[in-house]
Amino acid sequence: MSTIADFRQPAAKHAMNDYPEKRQFTRIPLTKEVTLYSGVSCWQSHIYDISLKGVLLACPEQTTVKAGDIFRLQIPIENSPSIIMNIRVVHLRNDLFGAEWTQIDMESFAILKRTIEMNLSKKDALRQDIQSLSADK
Image 1 (cartoon, rainbow, N blue to C red):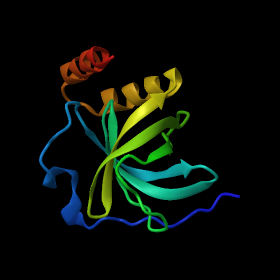
Image 2 (cartoon, one colour):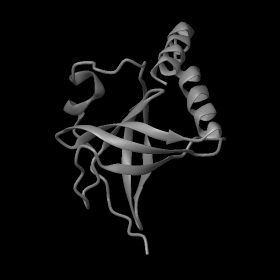
Image 3 (cartoon, one colour):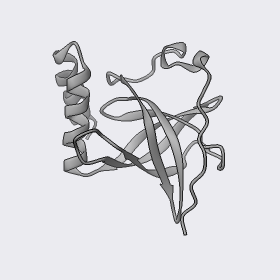
Image 4 (cartoon, rainbow, N blue to C red):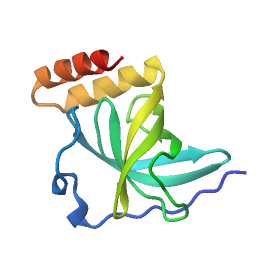
């Protein structure tokens, strides 16, 4: 049976711009409630930004998150199916964690790409990100 836990809303001081930029991919702000799954448990969390390769999330209160942890992430997208991906925690800071996706299906990737594209002011940045992603393979 799944359990759903409350999520923490990080204080405003933890905004994405407060940390040195380490991502090689362009991030866009995306503020909404998401669901994390691990085994038979699930938790509500909050996403703050997203890129073609990673996400910044609030740590759920009812579980301990550690670097290297693997979760399945479901991100609801208005007027589209949810983006679903497997993620691995790569860093933690206070009540936030950054994760990179390790597996994503083609439909979710297409929705992710379209979501980022609709929110980018510089369309060339997305093209460069896709080229970088292809180079990682």
